[in-house]
Image 1 (cartoon, rainbow, N blue to C red):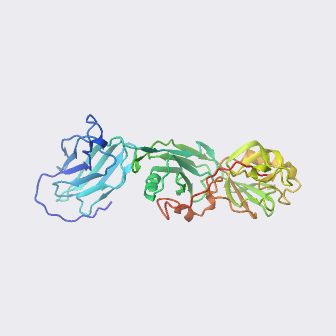
Image 2: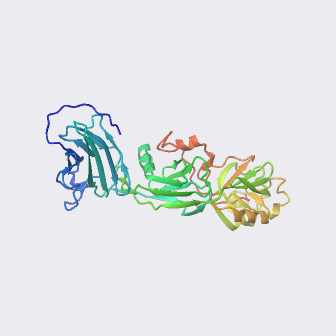
Image 3: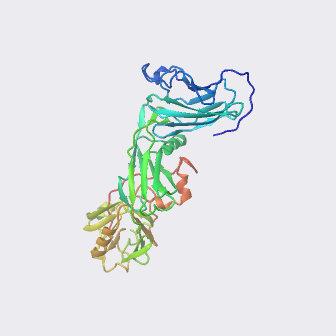
Length: 424
């Protein structure tokens, strides 16, 4: 807030501060006459003798579609500070004029909410005054509600698990995206710096600069309900989620040396001989996140475009399959290639290992753990659309996808197609 003041000479009169809501007389948006008034109509007497008046107008609830304004009426001093917060703990941002005569809200009010406004003043003799006012807003006349669904579900995850937010309605403008972001809160214990990134018009991902700390607690919640996002678009409900972060498990697969090294909390716990994708089916490089674990998967070459009956065709039962992409890249048991594991790359894109080692890996990783592939001749892991490649963006590029900083609101749209094939 701007607390700069300017001197002002006025004839002395009854002192007062007036709280008013613009267009509060608009009956279509304010509700029925029997709704509760904004505040009691009588004047309030502060301890230092300064008179503060409650809101005036129609006497109905404030229209949440309009800003709130606080002005010094016939008061000789100035307003020094205004704090407005609703019952859900959401603060209403505002701006105080340089002369301290006027304050107005600069962010949307929540609909169907009750606000407490704390006003601090100084009179012409320098004596401070303070008063608390209350007003309520009516139900928004929304045509659409913007609902949010957080992911993943509440549970225990690895240090690489992003928080996701899926919206039921597209949000395209940078200004509207900023409103949404401010209302979507992610908090962790211990606290870490993080940022949302817009994947497309309907999905956001949140991650910290580095992986989550081991054994952290991450909570995601929405303060969007009742908040105006755009023309006739208001925030709806969003159920919170809480993630418990487990040990830091990172598996690094070196396609050049044909080995996977598994680290737990920074210490090596296992080195496994593996085989990765052969030429033409090279495994993707980069950081991936465990998406799911499947004890049995039937894998067919036709699912990745290999013609049935061709030299590359396959149709095999696969055990202890740990999925890292939606398009079918797994870490799994491959007993048919044990002779090549640790020596050569012979798979169709997956990381294969012995049944014993695959079972160990399967039992020691969880959703959200990190699997990184290096020294492959394959392309980089897709950032979005094929799993969680979020960590392949450096921090500056990640923040540029936020509507609250960098080149906000203009990330490249991701390929959202969820592919179903499996590769061996």
